[in-house]
Amino acid sequence: MTNRNIAALAGLASLVGLAGCAGVGVQEKEGQLSAAGFLRLQADTPARVAKLQSLPQNTIVFAQRKSGPVYIYADAAGCNCAFVGSPAAYQQYQQIRAANNIAQMQETTAELNVAAAEDWGGAWGPMAPGWYY
Image (cartoon, rainbow, N blue to C red; front, side, top):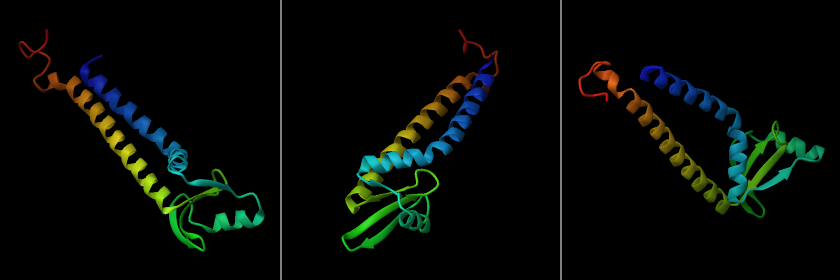
């Protein structure tokens, strides 16, 4: 295989990996919410199911309750549950998300640098004198 073919395969593998992440996104988000201190509340009665379905799905919304402000993430189609967290839990969730985004950007940058380095010799063609050992 040539360097160009390897780079193309690496790019294709990255796209396949990103496509796989789309399906895992909700599970990852729910794991991050749990790690941040959100409580998972199951919709186990008809009244709770109705309330869960009335909320915006798969997004975090702010609500003011008698006990104080809360953040709610509803997932009726997936876990049939809601994740409810305090402002402190929401802040922790934002920090977890930011850390994960930085890690993903660093990983992507490293992969792109490897792909670019593998194809570096192609800029002058395969016969560049002294380039290959």
